Image (cartoon, rainbow, N blue to C red; front, side, top):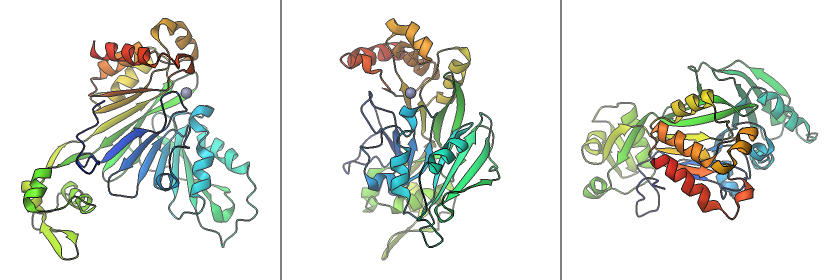
Length: 340
Ligand SMILES: [Zn+2]
């Protein structure tokens, strides 16, 4: 699948994030979304997280949970275990009822050794009802994870997270239970032109994030961008030679959904024009009846959705174990429906 143009350092500096499935497509789903040069990462679903290193999991600031069927949520414990001794908070977002479920998870452990001298790790959990984040529960290690309800944040409809460089949008799909699909939308894409950097004799590095942020904030050409202690350049020079702005990168994540009119409309809208669509591909079309009963997509349906939404690339996953020796058939069926 096309995933942007890799540079010689192995990192794609033109995109704000690099997204990768944590597991092979038959395992419990999780998508790891890693930011270049910063210590932040996101997770979509908390299925099997075991292939992720502690270092990677410790970078996760937000985890978006589609629904709490066990295959999408069983990784919660590992994430919590690792984060217990960190200072940065961890924010979880899920469907209606999610705050209660996270509270139950936390209450299933004994926290008698936590007190006011403990690390003050903070976990929040939020419910999204399809229109807005309606409820947030905060759980602090120093208070033995007793729940405290916070006022809902001021977000525009269908947005579950708003940050300076990107936002996360969500829709509620029907999977016999509410199931969230998500889209990562970069606000303004700033491409780094490698030849321009070479021309200026500048290295690739974390300073590019500061430069990109300055462009996003529309700072004047004369503002200085610090590359290292003894080197800074005016933003205008970078604008002229090394930075190009474009429409922001869009990535959509769709799992566990019945193939019917209302879901089709919502998925198409969410994924419209996405650069990357990660979509469940659970059954072959020959088992469409079973797919309908389980409220999952077939490969042909997933491909048809990708086609309707006009995405640039599609990554199928969440394959049923019944096809463990027929993986290529799933991929081919999806590909055919996508290409048309
Ligand atoms: Zn599932």
